[in-house]
Length: 237
Image 1 (tube, one colour):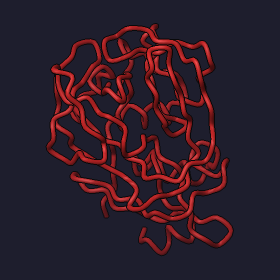
Image 2: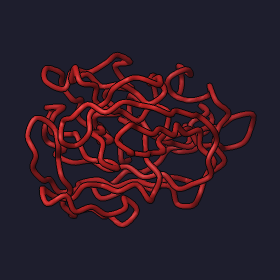
Image 3: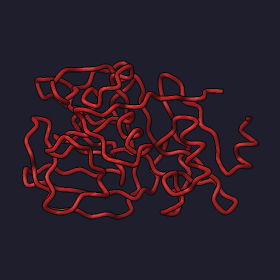
Image 4: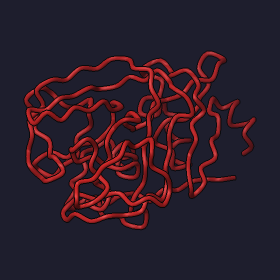
């Protein structure tokens, strides 16, 4: 099906290469008009392996559904020396730390982000260990039980894991609109082990794009020890 026909279905196609994904930078869609609630768009998203931000038609205009991402200034752990860099500075081929069951490094095989600032619905959280992070609603963290939890499912008092595997308590949580560029990445693309897709974001364990996409698709909590990550299935035509 060509792009014109997909637009008539209410979906604008995006091309995703093995190197990078560039989002369209359209206005954000109204809340409740994205893949997890719209059956037609969800089927397109599932068929093409797209679980993040992508352009759709809403009332005759193009808008973007939000991605599972973090803002550009979010510090990404690079190695066991606990060096870090803002995610917006990364590119395909860079090494970042993987902090699942064992700490190591992996090359970034896909990198994605907004072309320009877009208004997103974001969750801002702060922990008792002074970690602060702003993320999309369905960004995934790791609970002490080693089960994933999305940002929008958290409550004040809940515990999530830092990059050392230590539980930290959420002490402040807000949800509001924010105009910013959001970014995400993929590591260990050939692995279906969730532990291989846990990265360090602002000192906290988070799922990469593949792990977040799997969580979105299954719509149920993934156990980092026993679950399986779905491979990316991208139609580049």
